[in-house]
Length: 203
Ligand code: MN3
Image (tube, rainbow, N blue to C red; front, top):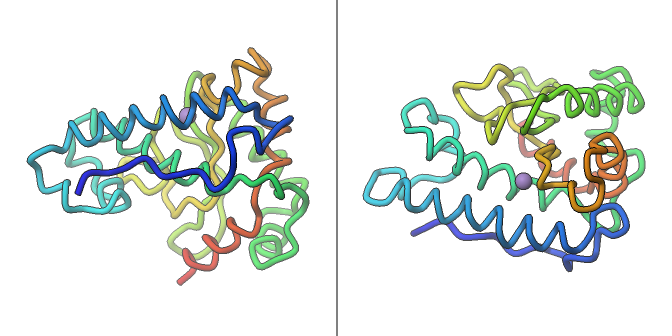
């Protein structure tokens, strides 16, 4: 069973004005689709065809670079679409919100650290909120399409929130203003979904 491009739960224009429809359409239909197509080509005829994308990421050191880049691209974007919503934004009042207060110094400190992770990621990559093996939250970033699930990652854990800071995620609307895009991203974060992923990752 080949990997497939997941459908979005909302229209391309649903995240406007924070993320514009054209960016969403190209990002999902062209960029993510290319990761899926290239991943399927890279694993054709190998055991990875029978594995979940999570298990491929966890064992990524065993695979050649095209699997790392495109498998990461598929996993990362699949998460990215899910953690955004037209009804998103605000400050979480649920379990993950409590954990951010207790473990990351409060929401404002978390937001500053998360945006700093995205701002200081030179070139292309991702900022992450992840649950570490000890069940505690951490904020980090990764280059290219790497992610905290990968065995080669500097920061390891289960990602529950990912922010794409590749230029293709924001350039049409924000040009070089990555900080403006990151500020806008906070207006579409679906904290209900992040909480769902948090509770699942804790067990
Ligand atoms: Mn992207």
